Length: 349
Image (tube, rainbow, N blue to C red; front, side):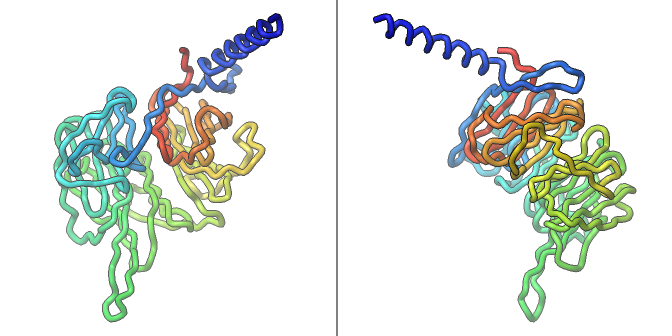
């Protein structure tokens, strides 16, 4: 009897302390010596007909935008105002699917691209308008959109062409530019040889396109002139932090940063407690310098100071492959293979 009571007390103590750990979340040691916590706020299962576009958006008013509709119609987008718990649908001119990109400049002005389709909204997504391709464009597979400011924007993609006589199909990259908030677009870069752009990012007058396995395509004058920078490492993702540093995720598991827009790169063991090679997939920064990197087996790295110090979180969520991350304020949205996770920094339950 005494043994049974003692065993029961031990179990209660263990449950009490494990519950306290879960409520606080995973600790983060910040550079100023203060502590923060990262905790899972919600986990939304995905299934057939309930997918999330790989390049989804998380706007400053904490609205999630998804080019995959969770309803019955194909030609609709979905948005959530409660961090993914419920979704509402809005009509769009054409269906998009998961392989598309949606980006909002601010809560009212947004763009979405896929294949050879461009749509825009100026009323917070209530209505969407189809935008025609500019004259001279051969683009038929758009992969991303980026705006430096409310006026200057870029769309990257490829033109798959079949050669006469041989029938061989090749893909050539193309970049579209606007300097009037998307009222007018023009072709500002096009190749004649095989090449592909994986992603496009921009800040101020700089635009960088991530090339397939080879390096970057870069313009320092808003798309007037372009140069190519080849790397001796393959890059899976690339972003620009609020302080202007460029960050990249290597296929070799290394995280690199550049303070001269990709001209030179520094490598270091910036993720604390990382004693194994991690295959990272996606990286994102918020406007206040919070950065999050996600990878396979549920691995998450977090910085609160523009990448000066990082903390590794290996057990905060399940071990599924994490594909895309977005950061907005204190909230972090992570797309996994089976779930959409919402995490909160400095969470107090």
